[in-house]
Length: 405
Image (cartoon, rainbow, N blue to C red):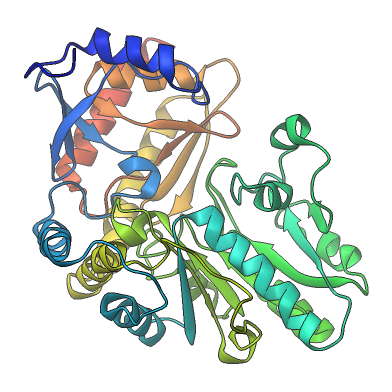
């Protein structure tokens, strides 16, 4: 069946429904063949302007020459070898990340969940080394930290917990942007506070400046570690290289993934020297994490973001995008809020409108968007998105929304 040059979409869907575990529900009826810039093309060469970017993964868009060249050249030489040996691209990527962030040391895994697992383990090990029984992590409601059992327990959404209970112990979920709730939750067994600077899956909610500064102060006063989950917010997405820069504070540990490998699985946990030193040989590891291919991709992505000043570009383009969405809000009363930073934006609709219906209508018109928590349309396009492509999206949304008046 698969030997023929052209495969019908119905065959792909049939095979998926027969053999793949259905964890994604009913998918959009499309299989993409290739992409260029911010545009994806399906098997019939229909074009879709992408405002999802593989869920904030494809920061450089599609077929970016720097990434393609790096992956191709590395694949020709060496795809994998064990971390029993030194790996050039691993060392170089760790260096460039340390030199451009507040982190001193890096460990690479394969995903955001793995990065957050590493952060949780590092926080616990830090206090274990000091002979302190501190293991509890305070996280926020509506947060999302991953799909492993530990990161699921850290995630502040009950709907993800219930099918897999009992959840691992040691996590407390309290309201987001509520400093008093955090302070009340601190106990003698608290090790760290873990937070997303912008909650992505939760509905694009931005952490307040006072809240973030207050978290840093609480951690300093109580000898706690501050962990930032920057899986979605890092690497230029919010208009800064990492989102902690917006707040004038530095975390003790922070994580990255999604955009880091440009589509090749790669995650990182970064930490200050004193905290990173808690990990000793044998404490943590990964067979595939930090391999030659993934780190070569990471080098290309990070270097391109820095060289082409894509963080600044995301800030400028994001402000333009935000203003366009605010104009739509002024026109349509059922748009209840527009929020976000840089090119991580959300437009919340009241419950009279089904956000998923808007996503489907956009898809039919050749645009890929996403609906996150609180009935919020989420826009996380490649960092190279143009104002013209934004204008096209806004015009399309305007035409769709008119039907709801």
